[in-house]
Amino acid sequence: MRVEVVVPELGLGPEAGLVVSMWFAELGEEVLEGDRLVELLAGAFTFDVQAPVTGRLVQINYYEDDPVRCGEVLGVIESFEEEYADRSPAGVREREAVPQFGRPLGTASEEFELEEMELEEFEE
Image (cartoon, rainbow, N blue to C red; front, side, top):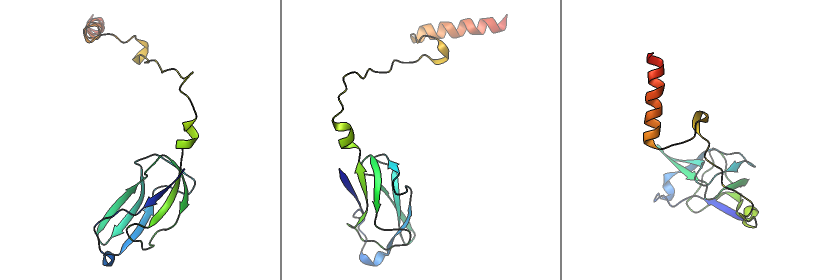
């Protein structure tokens, strides 16, 4: 599914001189929902536009120093939603917790006792 990346309504008038400052992702690059995608400039103010979905950036309509207005489509992301929608969780097992430093994880009191024993070894 294609999702448009739109210049948000910033409450600025057309005289604000909103321009694209820079893209944080390149065409064809994978992005995660919420990633900083593009930076917009209005005078001394900067605004970040975040990726609305996880996917691949497949279209860029405005580049560095291009003027833009609220509501215009900056680019398009091809969402990974459909790619994973048909996959069932059957056969996928949860990853087991891996103990740190090869020790089994225990209760807080067991951990405290273990630390005391280790300290005593160093004191001897």
